[in-house]
Length: 262
Ligand code: F6R
Image 1 (spheres, rainbow, N blue to C red):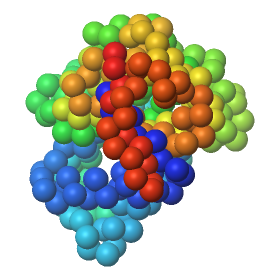
Image 2: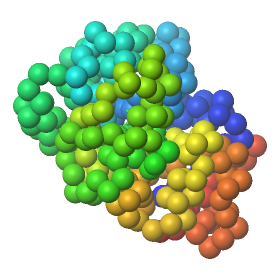
Image 3: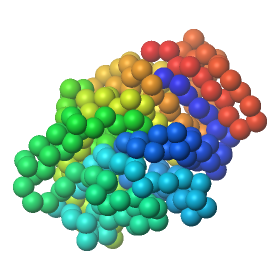
């Protein structure tokens, strides 16, 4: 795994956004795996601005999101489909038929089969991940099998609490979700994970410095051939960067890059 440590979140998002623009320009048919939540919002804003300046064209881009709440449809302002429409898709020239999220309503078994087929027939070139404070990626909660494909999950209390900030009250947070599995995530050709808030501090240290184990779903990434983790200097203060796990590759005014050993 590579680790990028940015001085601040602004430079982090500007850098990540510039990588996205370069990759889309190089491969207009790119298949992007996308996340919801607070973490990707600044990136989606920067990408939307770049589109407005005609620096990037999304007309041939395909997107496959990680997850959706069970029971919420696209008209519900708390659904992840609504989030993606509002925060990105409506602001760029992507074709609606090229954007996929798991469906959280209707026949769930059919929806799961549909998503598994979608993932079998499309390889994700670059998958964006946020990180749960309990180590979840997508909605793969602790102790999910590393071999899992799309499935329904019962959300942990900590996740319901973390996500309740986006709802009027905690009772309105759905208790279940549909998510692509850890095997699906691992199959992405390249993965970017952004973890830049204080509540991710402890779990990032466990992922980078601890063992690969199902208790911390994101630790599956330790064996992935092309994963980059983006953090800021506040989070980095908690890491043992002078220890044998980390080897400095590059540093400049905005960031340091480390190779992280398994
Ligand atoms: C969202 C998702 C989740 C979030 C994670 C972090 O699609 O898959 O894993 O990335 O819960 O959420 P935020 O970014 O709100 O801290």
